[in-house]
Length: 313
Image (cartoon, rainbow, N blue to C red; front, side):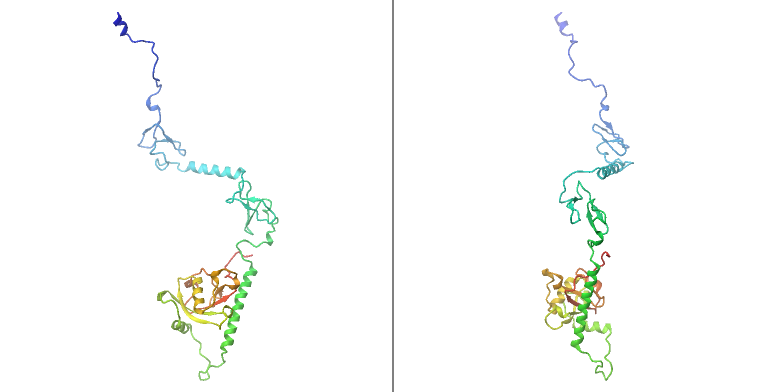
């Protein structure tokens, strides 16, 4: 009897596990990429096409999404709308803030708290109060980045005046006669070919410059650039040099004082005037671009910078 009662299992013992009401495949999801169908317990959802994918095919590129980029575009649009339509608050920072260009206004603009308005006429930025042209006296301002027309004309007049003085001194020193001693005939005029040949024959320069890169020029200096007599000479330079480097070599060759690299104002700086082109050359220009062999350049001091084409005022 005892053995019979001990072999009967008890019916009132509590359960030590949880019964699942779903099968195993109910956990996770199958990848919806064609030919994959892998069961992934942590599936990924594509926000563009709203399908579910495994780890390997979670990106739009991996599962060749038919609506690729839609979710990113919608998010950018929503972010832009929120940023432009909602006033934000915050303190101005050196990276984002700047003071209104009106001289009597201390408002910081282009910050999280205040927007700035750019004036297309004077190229300055103002707060909302001074954004109108009448409020900041736009008609009386010189546009930023532009040189006044009066200054440009003044510089041209100074350059032309210096060149005229130079030519007058040359003519006075040479004192040419009306008739040359060629049997009572007028002196023959030299052609550009003959002039270039003369420059080539007497030109000096760096012997390391390859022959095919040499540019032969006649270089002169105005009297104001030196305390000695009017210097002049024939030299050759590298076509790939900048005008600034050519000026340094020309000043050295003519023994003209050059203080361009020491700072200071324009009244002490040397500039290069191209006689055939009728203009001052920029320091950054390439020698071989604006000049030709046989041309003449003049070193002028205190004539101001070259005048580029700027905003018309």
